[in-house]
Length: 101
Image (cartoon, helix red, strand yellow):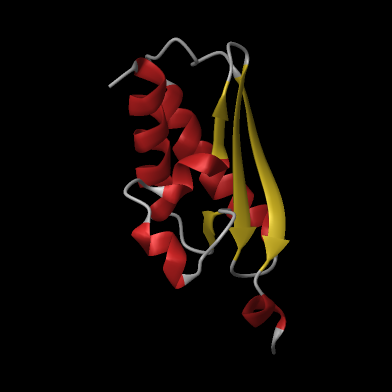
């Protein structure tokens, strides 16, 4: 495993513990379960200066969710070559259930 793939796994593990958000993946169909690797890795991009994680909001309001996620994910970056990288959390979608009163 490379440093980037280990970091990706750690970031996704942490994101899964944040209520109200999930990794934004291209497919959640039954066909996706046939893929022999974690599709959530497609929601994470790591470059030298930027770590970007794309998410779907499962609840509203969104800003408190991204603040909690940002703090948790920033802690994962501490002590890695990316600890000073910009952390971007990009909300790509809002789950329809979040908008139902």
